[in-house]
Amino acid sequence: MEKLKIEGLKLSLELCQFDLRGPDSSEKIVMGISKVLASQEINIEFLTYYPNRSNNHQLTFCINQDRFSDTSRILKKEGSLPMGWEMSCRGHVGIISIFPHHSALKMLALIMVSWGKQSIPIHGIATSLSAISLTTDYHVVDKAVEVIQGLFQLPDNHAPLKPELLYYQSAMVKED
Amino acid sequence: METIAVYWESRIKTYGFQRITDLALIEFSYPLSEIKALGEILSQDDLQMLRPKFMIAQESDQRISFILCLSVKEGRDFHASLEKPPGPTPRRYIYPVGIIFFHGPHFGDRYGIADATFSTLSKAEIQVIASGCSSSSIFLVLVQDDMDKAEKALGETFEVPK
Image (cartoon, rainbow over all chains, first blue to last red):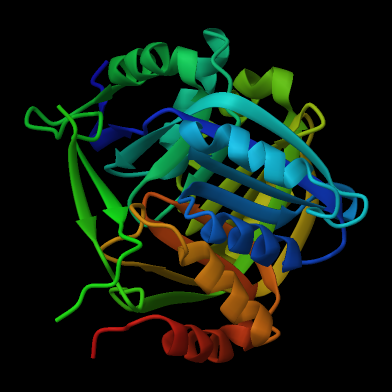
């Protein structure tokens, strides 16, 4: 059977994931947490927010693995989270972003079936205009990519899977 | 070899705001241990035609919750199909909602973008129904009537090409 074509595949660096859950408080939690992370110059690589089942709100975000300890410490500090909020975290995750050619849902369904067969977990999903991003455990990223490469056809001249150039926002203000 | 480039941006640059209106938001959940079965359900022919404008999934209490934004017709049909066993458990259907999404030259590389976005919306007293930030893009699902107000507020915070 002919493989479905995709336009590209990209892997993140090693990240960590935080899941925050709690009652009500609306989007104030997103504002509060993103402010704390910005104050520590921590880039959020992935974020999903939704007031999910039973009116519990959930904020999930991924940041670079080297900021795991700092961030855990800050969020565990008393008063960092609103009353009734709980935190769980995963120390080592990766994001695989797939740039679909056609139907995102069809591709996602295929990935869910194939990853399910191989016991590759999905910890989060978010789509953008051009990509589907899935978070999974970092130690299974290579296996997860291998499964995807078996399902879909990448263009011959596709870009490298792992980032080769890193950019940082400088803390220094440029002087003219 | 690692190559590092450093830049400085006084006001966060964007390529402008885009919006999609008249959407329905559907939430459903499924046991995490049966994600393969959910993949098989979503592989059904009548669901293959769906074109979600936005989708996120979150893991919680051994279940995975999906949030999809679809056109009204697709949303109505999909919601009805979820109610047929053995499909996933439908939780919520919200209509009408709209999406504002944007990205910029340094999204994905720098800190402070989520802070700028959510602080702006909070100050403007705009409720965010759902959000997903990935692949250097920010997607905000809002009550449709708040779209103009949100775009105006965000336009004052971020740099938008003229």
